[in-house]
Amino acid sequence: MEAIGVLMLCPMNSYLEQELDKRFKLFRYWTQPKQREFLAQQAESIRAIVGNSNSGADADIIDSLPKLEIVSSFSVGLDRIDLLKCKEKGIRVTNTPDVLTEDVADLAIGLMLAVLRRICECDKYVRSGAWKLGDFKLTTKFSGKRVGIIGLGRIGLAVAERAEAFDCPINYYSRSKKANTNYTYYGSVVELASNSDILVVACALTPETTHIVNREVMDALGPKGVLINIGRGPHVDEAELVSALVEGRLGGAGLDVFEKEPEVPEQLFGLENVVLLPHVGSGTVETRKVMADLVLGNLEAHFSSKPLLTPVV
Image (cartoon, rainbow, N blue to C red; front, side, top):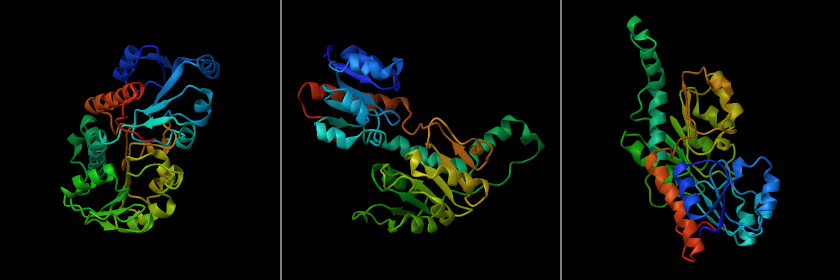
């Protein structure tokens, strides 16, 4: 398979990059100063694309590569891939579901604890020597809080199961009521937010879920409520989020994702009730290795005419 051209869109994992280089003819897109010219030159060579949650195969790239057969995403999210264009052209699409569920759900719980118990602020308090001048202020209990989850898919369900261990009542919103759960269903995100202390965004990003958390939702969550986003940045109206936090209309936020990554609103930097992470939901050595192996396995299966491991299209 060494002659098969694979276009890697951006640096994402050193192990994956090394293995792609060993097994295929790897093209590193981000190193090309004139990318349009490069695509034109390699149009007949590239048969696969590897992208992630930040860089995917849009219509322009797909149309530039007439020999493209498969797009393998180093991510569970598909919002950066033009799925309709892929279907139209018969291009296969794969992602990395399930394997990152536990890490993302773990991180969601970590963010809840970090925001409510002010863990990051406590750490700074000790390091700065302020503890010598007096005890840290009281914080807020997590156990027993009402946790509302937007999207009860794999990750949402894993978050719910973990929160249950803290005696948290679980509420959720999804496109339809789930049959095999005793969790409380609400038919709108505003209603869910009104009945939750912590609101977790865990749904897929689609045109319908873009800014699903807007001003009305934040106001419903209220000045004691906490927003946790481990989904995608555009799920939340970021400008409204900044306003709600600065004005005290929202109690706090734990954010792993942002609308224009890696750009983050600087107004958030000075807020002690906000915890900011650089999109590390699946960022463990163990999980990224498994994700990389899935990408490689899907590519090798496709070019060996075997069934794909995690087909989407």
